[in-house]
Image 1 (cartoon, rainbow, N blue to C red):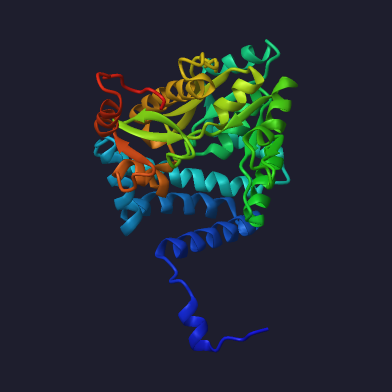
Image 2 (tube, rainbow, N blue to C red):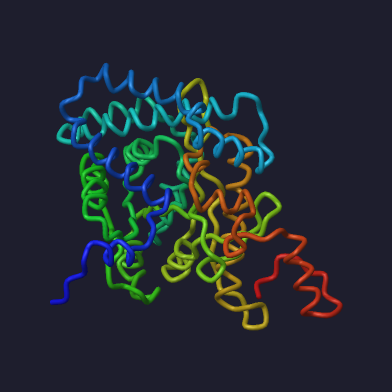
Length: 354
C-alpha cells in the first residue's frame, strides 16, 4: 500500500464547505438529543423548546435566511418569522417527547391529541379508502409532523413511505419514530434505481387498501422533477406520489395544516385523480405534471394562508427556489414562457409539459 506523507495528504483533500460542517453539526446535535431524550425531564424539554423559539429569529444566518425566503415568497407579515420559530420550537420539543416516550405509545397518542386537531375534511381519506383502491396522502412537511401523522393514524390507519438514506443513524431514528407512533413503515429499497421497481412495494400496499403518506414538497432539480408553477416561479417537485397513484389507480389526497390558537389543524383537499393523457396531449408525463400542478396550487394556498405551519422555510433547496440562486431548481415564469414561444413560433401557451 502506498503511504502519503502529511503534506501530500493535506494537499490532496478537497476543502470542507461551511454547509457540510453545518450539516454535520446539525446531525450530531439531532442524534445526541434523541439519544438523551429518554432521560431528560419533561420540564427541561419544554423549556428548551421555548428557548429555541425565542432565539431562532436572532440566530445570525438562520433567522436572516428564513426572513429572506418568506419575503421572497411575498409573505411580509411583521410576525411571520417569530410565528414560524414558535412552531419550530414546539416541533423540536414534541419530537424530543416522542423519543422520550418511545416505549410508551399511549403517551405519544395523548401528546398528538393535545397538539393536533383533525378538520372534518380529513374524513375524505376514510371515505376514499372505502372504495378499496387505497389512497396516497400527499402531505406537506407541516411543523410537528411527527405528531400530525400519529394523530391522523388515530382516525384512519395510515402507512408511511420513507426515502432511502445511507445514514444508518438517521434511518434508525425514523424507525423508532414510526414504531413509537404505531405507524407501519415502507422504506425505499437501497438499490432500487428504476422508478417502476421502486414503486412496487407502495403499489402493493395500495392494492391491499392502505392509506400511504408521501411528502411531495421536496424541491428537485429540473432533470429529476415535474415542472409546476409556484409563487410566480417554474420549479420542480417529485413525480413519485403522482406516479404511484397512477400505477395503483388510487386517488391522491392533499393534506395541509393551519395554526389555530396554538394548535395545528390538519385539513384535506379534494382528491386528485391521476390519469395519463393521450399521446397527443403528452401521455403519462403530462398526466403526472397535471396532478402535481393541482397539488402545488393547494400547497401555495396553504403557504400563503399559514406560513408558520410549514417547516421547510430554512431548507437549502427551497432557498435556491425562493432566491433564484440556481437555475437547475427554478426559473422565472416569464423566462420559461419566452423560451417556449421562441422554440414554437406563434405559441403563447403557458404551463405545457415539454
